[in-house]
Image 1: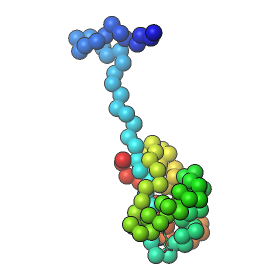
Image 2: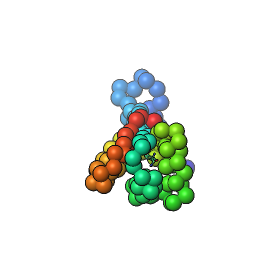
Image 3: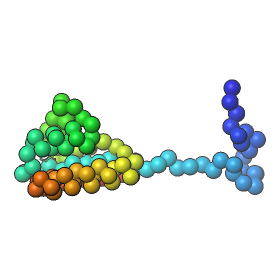
Image 4: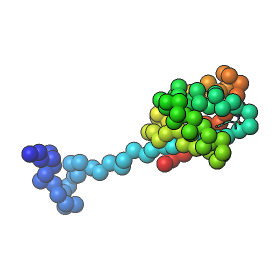
Amino acid sequence: MSQSPDHHLTDDLDVQEARPKLKPPAMFKVLLLNDDFTPMEFVVLVLKSFFGMNDEKATQIMLHVHTRGIGVCGVFSRDVAETKVKQVSDFSRKHQHPLLCTMEEA
Ligand code: TYC
């Protein structure tokens, strides 16, 4: 059995909330955008390298983006999503590909 430390504070008459309600952290989708120039193999490499996908999953997501124009690589906390976007953008720039990666709140 377990009791929360504030089991005696059950309503709004208390002077102070012992356990103020916390918002769940915002989550962010990391998105890849299609373009006409980035090689398919490079997009698959990005998905495997930065999103931990195997070859089959990476190919599936790449083809989704290629045909639909945009697709989700994963959903992460703000900090992790920002890091993924920077990693992909830096890696694409280094290899002189125009691949775009962005994020939006889930
Ligand atoms: N459309 C690209 C091509 O035909 C492939 C591609 C897929 C590029 C996904 C970007 O996010 C992308 N070479």
